[in-house]
Length: 467
Image 1 (cartoon, rainbow, N blue to C red):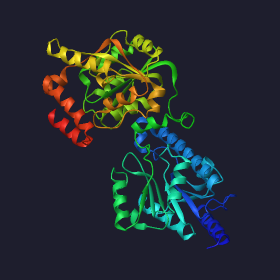
Image 2 (image 1 turned 120 degrees about the vertical axis):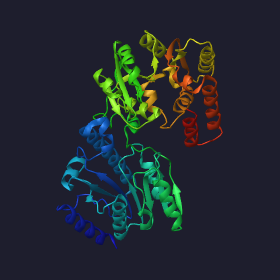
Image 3 (image 1 turned 30 degrees about the horizontal axis):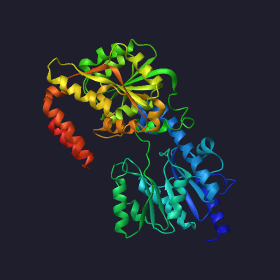
Image 4 (image 1 turned 90 degrees about the vertical axis):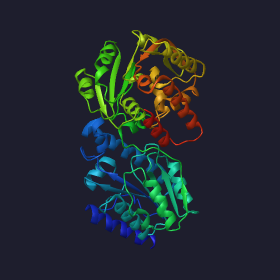
């Protein structure tokens, strides 16, 4: 098919799908094409897994920001490379998509029932129109850059398939130099196994594959922390930082017994906001927090993802991560701001356990020596950090455990971690339940096993059984 024939096909397809003439700038007549799988930002239908945190309108607004960001990236790459662009959309209409995202692009309604069917249809159409290299992307990856698209299309000169893996187990990009419909068949879309299932399909049809850099998708509230690295892009969808404000982020799971007391102690402090992030409590934890007048966010279970979700929706200049079974000293806010005036990267409090028995003094001593001399405070010491640094680090790992250990390791590479002279007092319930010696040895065993390469899944299972 020569270029005049391609132009005719493009115009015909566009008129049939949208009822209007082709755009002034033909966007997919080139030999290489980027296909963007997008959804119209309709409230209640876009980014539904973010609705518990942002509400229907807020989730739709954030989705619109993601689409705009992705299309800016693709346009920039197209200007450099001369590739074509085809935006395959679901929901809404072509007219609405053009109004929201630009008259210069071709918006084609997606065809098919499953995501795999829709991607396969778009790819098949591109190759039928004469393309020799096709890349399909979604709109959920704010970290995507023109360089990733360049590497993807360039790699197709030497490999059959190129894939950009996402941290959540899926992929943000799929490229082909020939149509391979088998790659889209029988995939459990939306699961953590999408990438592995796809790689298995590629191997099964005996195609070569290249993997790009791993990036983050934005699907759940904890993923929003990535968006805070792009202030201008998401200015209308996420909170803006307020100078001099301290955000206190409290992850909870069935904490009804002590939560009211904790909230009353921190709500008295001026220039603070309190955010409770619940991981699926079955008691009255959320109701207690709502009655206290604090912001409540619901997300998946796990302290790392809960604290990320809270931080992503915080407005503070400084973020304080506080366990629900902890209590802070009366002057905690002044202590934090004094630490932040120094050149330290972050800080934490000394550890105090609320049990008078002498054995706990040994646990405290070891924790305080470790945090001061090794610069490794743990999460029960109420860690605090400037929000810019936290977002630049992409927050905590969304791990089932050891998220605080990893975070402290990364923090100390940025500078000194200040250990405050006063203590955060934590409940002794964990040591009482497991036993002081067993709990201490278990913590050390898990850290050693992690350093030796044991998977976090196995370590989480071990920790769960030991509890």
